Image 1 (cartoon, rainbow, N blue to C red):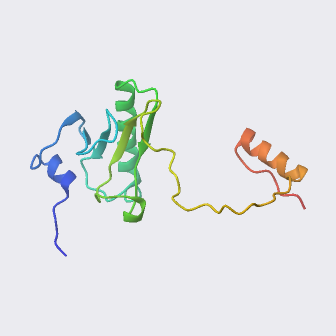
Image 2 (image 1 turned 120 degrees about the vertical axis):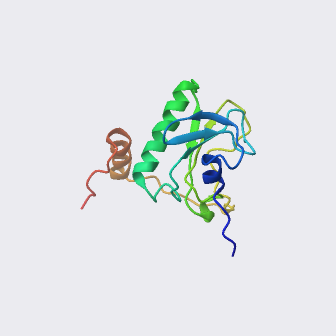
Image 3 (image 1 turned 90 degrees about the vertical axis):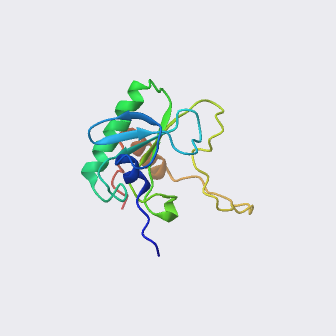
Length: 150
């Protein structure tokens, strides 16, 4: 196993090229190598943290910078996406947030499709009992599940 330098740390140190969108004292925003939509930007902390769970304070500060950039870019429709771990599609182990401007029919497949094959078997579903419908209504209205019926 080779110890490759972190590409985002190399950019932060000025040892690797990047197209900068914005720079703050604690964070940079750059154009990724292969943007998936026009305006796709990576927001990256200057401090090396592996992922969003590594240091919640750095993650919060980085998300704040992404929100500021989103406002500066006047993006009405956008996604802010990050990942943790290779099975969650994290390809660089340095926290980075993808700020993705969105437009109708932009070709970006979000929300995600699970990739799992759905069964074509017909399933007969009974209507929800009244208490289930009420619980769903309360969750949608109040954001918390009510007490379960006895």
